[in-house]
Image (cartoon, rainbow, N blue to C red; front, side):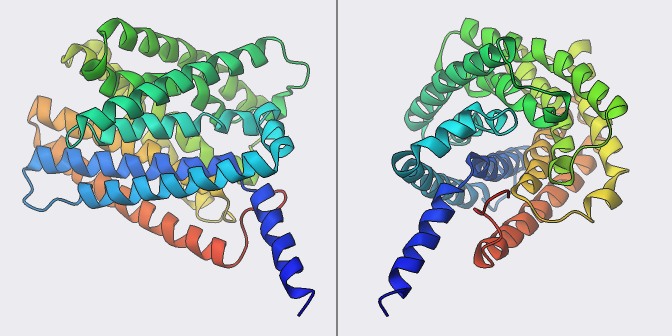
Length: 328
């Protein structure tokens, strides 16, 4: 009896020490699904309200993850610092601030006051993290081509999310600033990443799901640009169709993704699918074409199934202690 408790405590401490910041990608997927359902309810005039329940789940999961990572920051400061400075893990640190921004977007309709504070804190923190990552890239001594993966989009392109709720909470100049910052780095990183993929071999298995992140910048860019201008002009259509093209490209690679071992990086499937679903709903509203309504319905069904499957597989991995372990 005297050895059981200490052994359990050691095991719990090890899991907390290895609790990765990439867990907050789960929030991106859940809030993306929430916003997609909220938009669907509005577009189709649905009598049933699914989004409030999804929002409650998203908020609860965020609180739990934030509490756990805060505990890690207190008890294992060195591990947190290592993540912030790591050439690969560093890109996932802003998933926390993006989670706040997305919760700000999701709560705007029901709680605009709460939305303002979530958006404000998330936006300020994301700017700090973006500047830190950019400085790290400029003055690095440790990055190699093998470190590149689509997760590198997260720190800078996450700025494109800011205008979606930002147009309601602050001067449009602030929203245009963040939109411009993210939009500038999107093609830059796309070029670098395609160079890495074509000339330096495929991504490691655990990072293959991050290929779906290629969908997010143009899809989110379309949503933010439409929010800023309220127009479906030529540039808006280019953004949307680039996002749709990446969706089709990745759909043809389905057999590669179904064979992968489970990692938390599987959650990279979720938010990009949510972004292109929401973008398609906007296209349906603005054009009135039946094609977009049908496509949006199909994408929402796929997104819902994907998030449900990811949730079930993640809970199973937690029960089996497959996550929060060294190297996962």
